[in-house]
Length: 225
Length: 363
Image 1 (cartoon, rainbow over the protein chains, first blue to last red):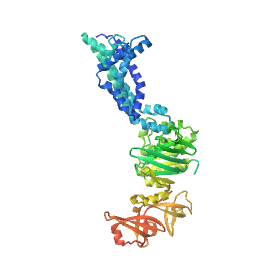
Image 2 (image 1 turned 180 degrees about the vertical axis):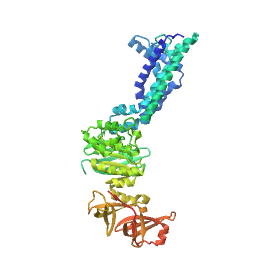
Image 3 (image 1 turned 180 degrees about the horizontal axis):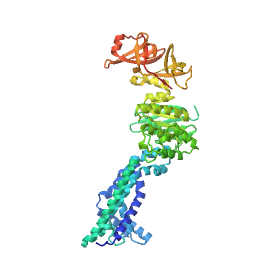
Image 4 (image 1 turned 60 degrees about the horizontal axis):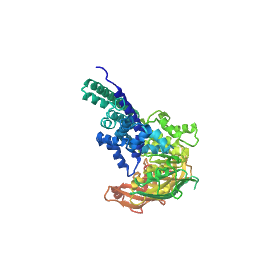
């Protein structure tokens, strides 16, 4: 068995890593706000964050495709800024993945913040820490497990993405052809050997990552839990 | 009124609770905030610390305005020079004891030196715990570390929310004497929330009594608690009466102190910082009092007071009844069985001897 073309695998990891990073940046403040607010619009925002969990990826992909069309405002803005179309591009995939995996980042973080947040913030404030200081030095270290869980879930969820990518990304090798689509292609063309190889790589990798997370979590329990 | 008095004028309205308070609390010693749960004790502390905002009024500490509706001032919690020890304390679980202390130390804006830190670590007796994580600490150790961490900020005002609530009896006794010494040593004015009359009467200089968000009384510990003990509807068995006496002398050999109550004398374990001639308050719990119609002799109990039966509360539903006794002009109570009442044939106005099993000093 020869090793199949690994371009798709590499592209997928890049996509998942960038998506996770972006989600950390936008998911953290969102989750914090949701965990602390008593605003009346909180349920509405929570529902919006959770939408990708229940919607068929094709629905999400369809609307994204429409929004990314060079005639639509978002697509046009991107076109003028970069000179490239958003749909059928790697950037388009990233945007799609961020929305698609948003609940996997926000929900574990929100739970984690709700458990430690307010008390920890007040304790830190009573010791003279400003809110930002308290968040960075107390809440985040106490939420390490929440961040770990959220990041791994987001990363893994993006790895397995299929429907949204198919809708907005198409199937351009090296640009938008991710591993799940590559495997699908191999199966369609009855190239089972390559489908097997890629699938096994994915299974092994996923297992190792999850194993590391659980092992790390256990070690943390000793000090934190 | 001292320079650092805490001036409170607070109106807070919630759906099911309101708090309305107008008091000036002297900026010295220990003020207990005492009341049933739900009276608003913790809410009051949170308002003072800045975690809650009143709807109207002001909170001033000395010359500093922390909150004022009229002037639209709200000093945020982390900027108030307040040390708040929460109920359940809340040490940072991911940091060692040492790191917990440094966290507070680093954010202390007053100029501190390392002597101060060593002093706190020694006073709280936590030198051997510095490398440990909070989850490995016992209840008493945990509270001591939390107290040390709070002191590390060098607060101008200390707010303690039921610091002993989570501890068993033995730890409580140990920690309360440490707390007494600490607060005297560091001389930080303190508000001490508690619903435990033992703690309050032992540690506080004055008491602010809260009930459903209103101050029902505010004054010296002795007068406030004495009034509370005899209030209708309270359970006097737990409360105990406070009577005052004068220190007559010390028995150094046995470590006792003679307290005169009118023409009576009783002996109690000596206090360190009390001199002859001083007035002290003594608390007597009704369950620790027995009655004799004849002058007692041949008993291990050293303390008997000659007094008069003022009233008899004979509750037919229980095996016990409560006598109110008068010694000089001070009232206290005895709880005896109804059978004993009948056997001794006690009458109102009858002179009797009250044998005091144990009594304790109040500050």
